[in-house]
Length: 113
Image (cartoon, rainbow, N blue to C red; front, side):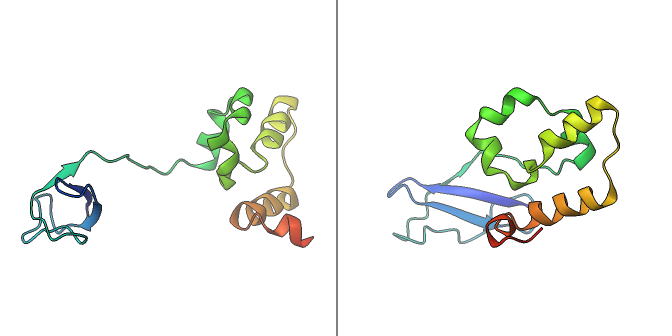
C-alpha cells in the first residue's frame, strides 16, 4: 500500500496518507485548515538492508556521522567489521548479544546483556 505525503498550499501543513492504489485519494483535505489544494511531495524512500549487506558496505569513517550513531542497527557493526578483517568468525553468543542490544539499546544502561 503506497504512502504519500501532501503539503497544504495554504498553511504548509504536511499530511501523510495511506493510499489504495497509486492515484491521489478523493476528498483529500488539510487536517489543519480544511484546504483542498494539497500538493503531493516527493518523499524519502526506505529499504531494508540485510545485516551481511550492512557489514559489506560498512565504512569505519562513517562512525563519526550523527546519523550513524542514531541508528541502533549499527551497534557492534565496527566490532563485526574488525572480526571479519582479522578472519575471526563471531560466536553465536556474540551474535545473540548484538541482536538483543540492537533491538533494545537501553539494555546497556539496565546492566543486561
